Image 1: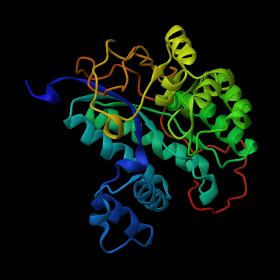
Image 2 (image 1 turned 90 degrees about the vertical axis):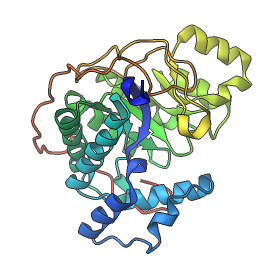
Image 3 (image 1 turned 120 degrees about the vertical axis):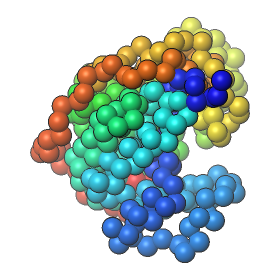
Image 4 (image 1 turned 180 degrees about the vertical axis):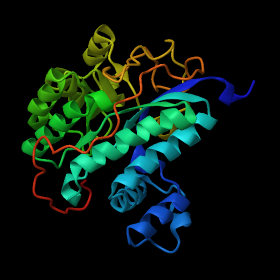
Length: 303
């Protein structure tokens, strides 16, 4: 039996990082966005710093509805070849790049609906708050996650430096009150304390990465008692490990993030392949923003 014959889920994928070089060239051309001539050579992994540079180069090219929709559909097609039936995908809102936040969310949500129809892959969305955002900007994004909950947005995360997360506690409380789950990155760039603050201050349903928790035996015991899922990225950490659970427990467009009980790292290689049964999200409607976007600012390493 081939690997693709086994149905799989993937709980940690950054959509900006899935864009292949030919697609990036196509998107950059229609947006008049400059790319290096040797783009393909840049896709050879060197180190983490270089990885971030290429990630930011790609994110900078994505600026309109069609871009956001396309990257979801294209990655779902690729994931389906490997047997994926369910993805929880991450994206950056782009406030500091001056993007229309409603257009960003609508593009990704419409892409998720199209991915289901074309490829039979259920995609749920979990936008990240970069830690360079102010608390007010973070709360703006939290309100958007609640507004788009019925369109497939199921979680709110924190990305970038991961720590400190305390300035964003109110944003996560807004999301939680609106039925959106908490899926912050923690415990990769920062130590075990970042995992603890994500658990206590952000009420994390899932810790993304979380590997530095091993530095604190008491925290490990607490994690075992609380049973949030720890989800490092398999390709960056170690060989993947199969989950002990079955299919994702939440398939509704209104659902919070799924939390199958998986060993670390979480593998997408799970569940029986089937066409997802979730209802199709409501058709796209362009609405007024729930809160005006903050004045855009440009700074390296931010989105």
